[in-house]
Length: 229
View 1 (cartoon, rainbow, N blue to C red):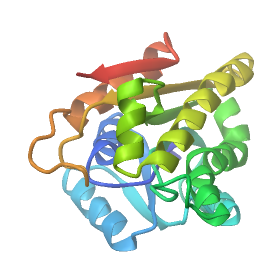
View 2: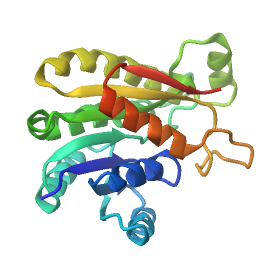
View 3: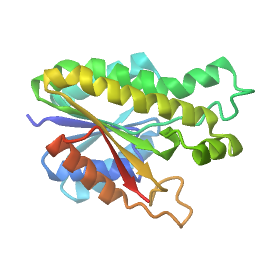
C-alpha cells in the first residue's frame, strides 16, 4: 500500500503543483478542501497524468472534521507520510472591528487546524520519518511595508495568523526532529500564477515552488526557505 500525501487547502496553484510533484514520485494524493467540485476536478486532472488521487471535502478550521479526514485518508490510502498545509482564511480583515468568531476563524485554519492534523497523523509521520510542509508567505514576515499593506487592504487577521503559523512551524520543527519528522516551510514572496490572487501579473511559478518543497523534503537542510522576488 502506498504512503499518502495530504494536500490540505487544495486549489489550482501551489497545492495542485504539490500534488503533481509528489504524485510523480509515487505518492498517492489526498486532495482536501471545502470545495468538493474543485477537489474532484483536481483528481480528474491528475488522473490524466497517471497520478492516483482522491477527493476529501473538509473544513480545515473544524477540528473534529480535520481529525475525521485524516482517519479516512489512512483507511483509504495508508500511512500519512507527508502533510502539506496550504489553507488560509481572510476573516478579521480589520482588527479594530472583527468579532471574536472572525478572529478565531483565522487561527483555526492557520494554526489550530494545522496542529490538529499533525496530531492526528503523528504516529504515521513518525513511523515513516515523514514531513510537515507548510506554505508561508510575505504576510507572515514582520516588515513595515507588509504590515502597512495588511492594514490598508484589510488583511490584518490573515497577516497575524500567518505570523503565528510561521512561529509555530519553527517551534514544531525542533519538537518533532528527535522523532525523525521534518517540519519546514517555503515562504513565497510574490503572487502565485494560477492562484485565486493571480490577476494576470503573477510572477511565482507554482511548479517551481513545488520543486523547492520537494528538495526541502529530501534534503531537510532548512526550516524556512524564502522563494520568489
